[in-house]
Image 1 (cartoon, helix red, strand yellow):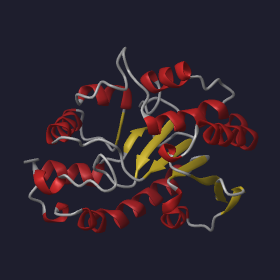
Image 2 (cartoon, rainbow, N blue to C red; image 1 turned 180 degrees about the vertical axis):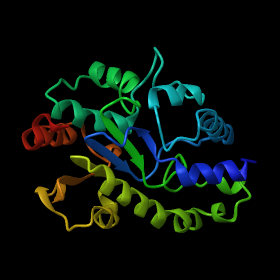
Image 3 (cartoon, helix red, strand yellow; image 1 turned 60 degrees about the vertical axis):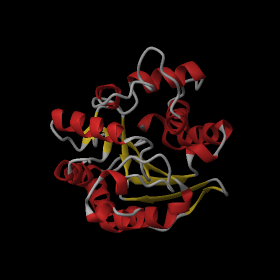
Length: 239
């Protein structure tokens, strides 16, 4: 069984990767992973050993927690990150070839001294939005089901992310997963309009521009390339 105290601390404190000072933030629903209990245990151990930080350095943290598939010399593309990186590179006027995407993923994406923040609304990794393995792995009552878990953490996490946005004021925030646009609107504290008709929602408040894209696993390369071009036209070298 996973250690209850450490698991609770992780759920309370851990938000993702990169730096809060970044000019661009990506905010998703939850991180993929957690296929086996030992995967989560290694992650908890690495997080504890590293000082229980709210944001980790992705290119270092993943290998340290036993997951080398996205950062070693034989790394493959992570499907969600691939499209987030595509938007970034295109927005910065750089090529989005497969080699460029993979190189950025391996060395730069979500690193502590980097240029982006990768945060998740829900803290615990899961293979999918329907899978729920923590009932088998933990005796904590709020992990007996996915609905109990979300009721336990969702509003507090949303409020905490909202407070961090107010404190750090990034230039651009991209929420990915348009089916959650209502909650994204609560966090952004505004009403969405169509930035690209039928493809991208946006709003601007207090110097930060917020966007909602479709989920990277649900859309094509061309869709995210188009979003990247839009970001370049709209924000230039600000991100």
